[in-house]
Image (spheres, rainbow, N blue to C red):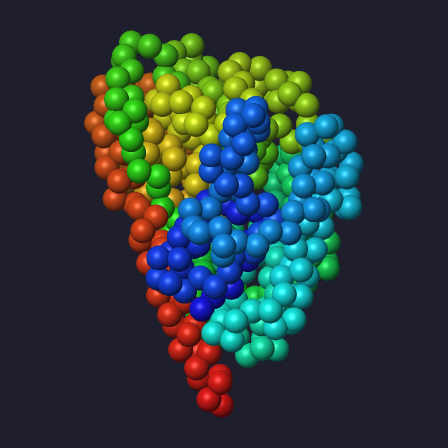
Length: 421
């Protein structure tokens, strides 16, 4: 049996929980907030939409919550008291993760878990104390690492801050403390198995880690394309080419390069749609000063994000460092061809000229060149949308879940070897 912990309850952990529950291996899931479906009907629709991201498709008797600090973080941001949730604040993301990690470790150390629990499955930045406690019980440890190794992340982000200093304010993670980075190293050292979502993340691991740890490549899946996505293959070739960027408005995701590409392109028949949140210390006026011509859609509930996607023609993510950006999978499932870098973790998603194109990082020229191609080959878009939908349908979460189950099964064998020694 497995104890699974994740502080935020994202799409990834929902898939892991589904897989473990289906196999009969889930002893318990620990998270900060878990929201039942449908939940209270009196809540505003936008609030319910946000909370349903914390919904788990498993029996809630297995779910245990530790909500207080995460609730304080969310509430402080909602009421505009951002200092509490800012980096270094009492309810920052790092503080939530550290406190949650200590809580789960306390559960394991207190022997409240059933004796049949053999494996601890934890998430990056919330695993150090959990794995320490699990090791003391002789349990195997599986580490979910959703983004590139911190050394690669730090190198790329610091290079970017020097290349485009005016965009430094948008880049979170530049000032991660030595203590936080040391914890990442400790988590990896304690793990028996590391699960990564893409070849890019796998290749970012130092050679010594790859040589001494069991590293499992388990790519995240795409949502199933629905009838609405299929019917979105309908835009008229005489209209403007609608290019969409979805995500945090940060240079980690290459937004500055996309803005520069649009200025190079300078075509009235191409429009850029930006959907996402501005950086905490970068007002919308900053982005307008960099490129005034984009259509800003702000942040929206997930269903509305997909609606906006389906109104567009091409999805662009010129990111510097990701793990396997889920938004590109949602774009495929919405029928959009991709224009992404090799650092988005989508190397298996892009079939050049069929489902999109891969571009190098830090290259506005390459972005502009490919957008020119899309604008000049509008007759190719209908076929590319069909190929995008087919690729999404073939990239299911079930494959990811089965890879996870293989890793868990192997951890049971590892536990047995440890118990026998």
